[in-house]
Length: 265
Image 1 (cartoon, rainbow, N blue to C red):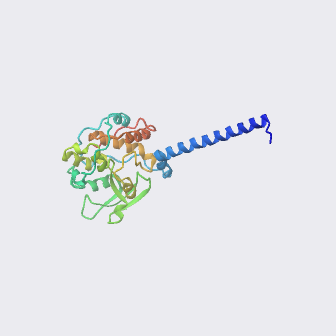
Image 2: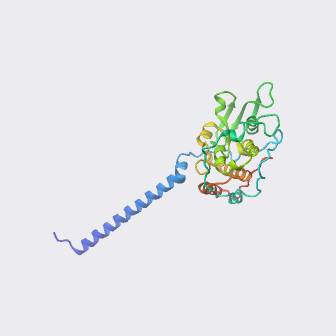
Image 3: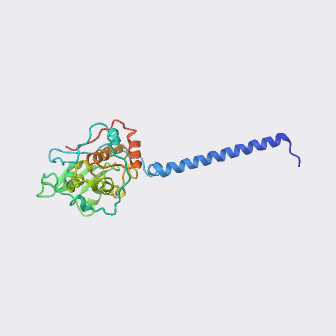
């Protein structure tokens, strides 16, 4: 069969166009894969949730300041982030919760343990158990991590719904400088109101010992405050960040470059 030169040229042109389309599709698939396995997998799993943009830090009416290792630097969280060292994680095989002291001590010596102090600070309509001025029996909260309204009731099961989260997880802190702190400084880190938030129990469990590179609150309104709070804690206790963690923090703060650091007291 004889093929004319014009027909041959048309066939070649269609072939080149087909290959160009295939190449474009391949590039798009690769780009989509890169996006998904970095930030996309988190965004895809997160429905848009309206919630609070900040959480309480300190209430001087009943709390006393916990003395940190260093004062929180004043200014923007972005500037404070640039002042944090960037290193890899130290080993975690020797981590023990006891290195940060007994859980929920009365570090500020106001007569109430830290857990009840944070519940009292973060909940509204607080009711104490009969005969106590410290032990929180019930209250309400617009939970910051998922943005939902939650009624708190003390009990073995219901108390799991609202837990006290270490904003900078103690396991993360241990791998990023806390091993070099004194026992008293680690005790302060674990009980500093700046590093504690009453939060949704399942969200807290999901976070685990994760940093900003692996976990951020589902409530996107809260992320600037959350990241600024992590940076403030890390600066205050001479902790470092990993490069992926710093990159994740900067991405959050790009939307709120004037977000200030936070301090308790």
